[in-house]
Picture 1 (cartoon, rainbow, N blue to C red):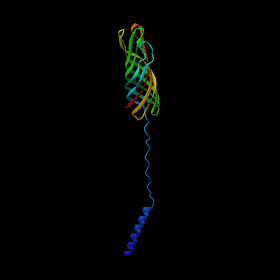
Picture 2: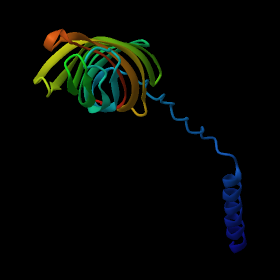
Picture 3: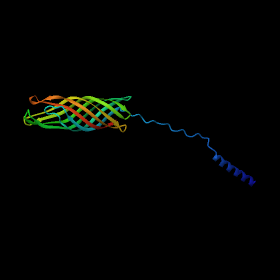
Picture 4: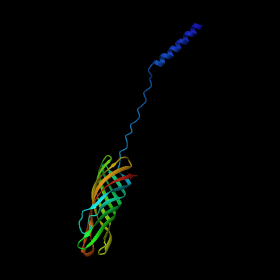
Length: 212
C-alpha cells in the first residue's frame, strides 16, 4: 500500500513539473497606446523684455542721436493653420544722444531721446516653433533739444510710423526669443529760427517673451 501511495505522489509531482514547463496560453499584454505630443500653437497673451540699439539717419539741424535702449513688451497672437496675426506694444527707456555745434545759430546743442514707444500689428508664418513676421504701426519718442547759447530748449512727444520684420523661436510652450528690425520715420519738428530736426530711427533689438 505504501508503495502505491508513494508512486502516486511521485507521479503527481512529475505531472506538475511538466505542466509548469508547458508554454502559457495567456495572450501577451496589449501595447500602450501612442500619445502624440501636442502641436505647438502661438495663440495667447504674452509679456516680455527687450533691448538693443537705435539710431537716427534723418539729417537736419539736431538729428541723428544714437544709443542703447531697454524695456518691456506686451502682446497677443492668434494662429490660424500656419498663419499668425497679433498686436504688440512696447515701451523702451532710451539713451539716444547727439551733441554738436549749429553754425547758423552760433550755439552748441544737444538732442536726447529718453523714451521710445511702438504699437504695432504683427503678421507672420509659423514653421512649427519658428515664426517669421512683418510688423507695422505707430512709433513715438520723447525728444529733448537744448541750445544753451541761444538760449532755447524744447521737450516734445514726437509721433510717426513703424515698419519692420523679425523672427521668433519658441524654446518651450511658454518661452520664446526674438530678433527684429524696425524703421520708425518720425514727423519733422521746426525749432527756433526755422531750424528743423528730422528723426528717421532704425531700431535693432532682441527680446525674450513669456506666453500664458
